[in-house]
Amino acid sequence: MLLRQWLVFEAAVCTAVAQVRSRLTEDRGQATAEYALVVLGAATVAMILIAWATSTGKISWLLNKVVDSIADRVS
Image 1 (spheres, rainbow, N blue to C red):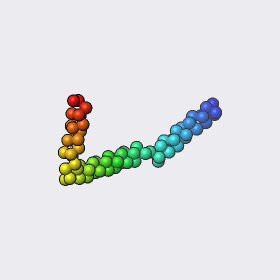
Image 2: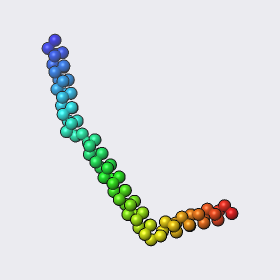
Image 3: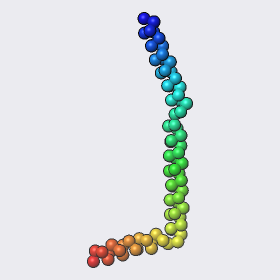
Image 4: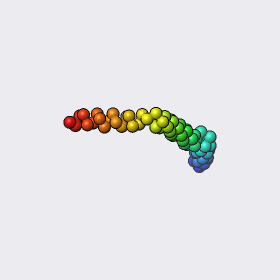
């Protein structure tokens, strides 16, 4: 009977220690913050690229090249 009580007590202590460890090393919030920063960085780079491309007229040049290339392949 004493052994059974000891095993129950030991299992409870191990469970409590595991729960405390998981709370101390939980990374879910950190991963979310890192993901948000990466998305924000990618959006910033995309906005800078779009602003540059529209101010230099490169978008219309690129679209003309694509349409011309497709038209050449079709005919």
